[in-house]
Length: 104
Image (cartoon, rainbow, N blue to C red):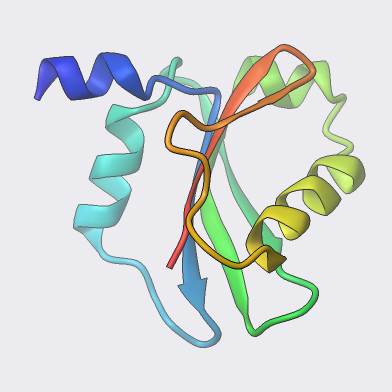
């Protein structure tokens, strides 16, 4: 488990969920294990072309770097959600921060 954690330690971890679906406590615990920091903010980004969203957390330092202005970041995540197929296994780079989107 520790080796898996080292592979996906990221600044933002999101899990795609279908419209009107919920997350479980297990989902949230798994997300928390992959974040770089203990101080985090909740985050939700919506797909534009399908009925889903990505829910998770963003590290406090990443949020502060963005000055809590998530418009461009939300567009970036929406483009990931709208793309067919699996997400990148290693996540995505965004302004020097690491993002992981777990797709349906």
